[in-house]
Length: 566
Image 1 (tube, rainbow, N blue to C red):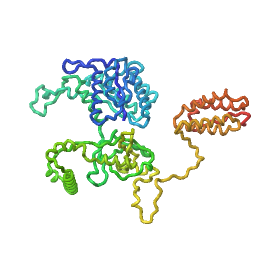
Image 2 (tube, rainbow, N blue to C red; image 1 turned 180 degrees about the vertical axis):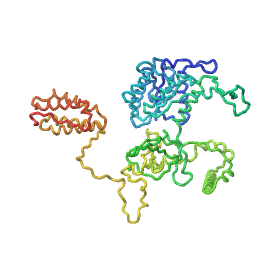
Image 3 (cartoon, one colour; image 1 turned 90 degrees about the horizontal axis):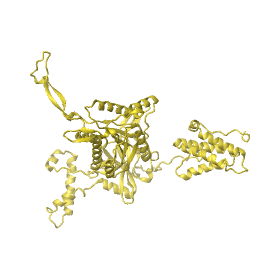
């Protein structure tokens, strides 16, 4: 889950804020302190795998630090940031969309944290004019990637201008169509309550306790280091909370351990035929259903991929009698298994040295030598080249497998499939998977994985996986073009096939490239070439350059009528 930190460096950020005491702090210094606190939270909460980028903006923008896991580089860059001119929020939002699209594509969920004093800007680039232009043209800010936009507003909550500016930023956030919110410092801790007795219409005060009211009197500005610190904690708590789950494999109590899933899985939202949206969440208990070869799984469509790590936690030492009295039924049986296993281990691990002397050493190394199903499962999946089919919820499945990003290090990954049991066509219904022992006597073993029907080679399907495939298709069109007018129908058939494939993939640059290639081929035609060859190439180039018709999937380029093809 990559994160972009957008820092406002306009001149308004250099203003001083009167805080408690004689210390004078600027908005820029408070923003830097909030960014450093955010980076500290990532380091302290097992979020070291988070890619973070730093972007500063005023009327223009600059990518100071590209996406990196080296948070010290971001800290060093924060100390070298200068102030510039006025604020222009629209430019940086378009720039962030381009940055996320270039680095992460359109499938990865991204976080955008904007640290600003909620300046509205001036002139045509002010936020009010931008909102009015968006509402008039009905063209919202484009965000290709599924991002979450959060504004960390640095301002005095007792200032009416700041509160009015936050309303404009909220409207800008609503128009952008991004999920997120505005974070404003809380002012409740910066006021004191004074008890005042109610007075009746005659001016006399009441002596009853029920008639006493509390009046808030400000004792400090709404923006302090403490309020900014609490606001940053709320940002981290809402957007960077760990996702803890229990991984269960079988009924044995040792084959269960707490795990940490990073990045946290997002809720899955679907829309039915009537337009009703339904949201599903992954269960906190992940159950292993069985194992399957990775070669049989292939590369199915997935919702997201996550890193699965064992979570180390210290269990408090309690009295065994209290534990036994609090457990019933199966819990007592599990406690007996634990005691029996511990006694067997102590018996075989007992050496010549005194066990009392080794008690302190065993206590310190107990955490590192504790059994973990994650270690066992990771090693087994890596050696056997298999994956574990896991149940993530009601009729919702996924796969756990070993993935090596380098030759020396491998990680255990979780791939989340779309909800449903028939989401991998070549595996069939996941609820009906079983082993060979499940077959009835005399029942024939079905083919696995499920093989598709034999496809015809005459299907008009274009697949460009490598550069050579695209180059061969273009060369085929040029070979037909040099044999005009005999190959006129073949030339336009191949041209329309490539054109439709390019439009389906969004590869509109290929159309302009083909037009340039055709125009370049006209002067290089041999002297004995037919005049119809140059005319058809020029006609095809002109049709490809027409913006309206060339972008239409239903439109087909037809041959130019000449005396040779009439």
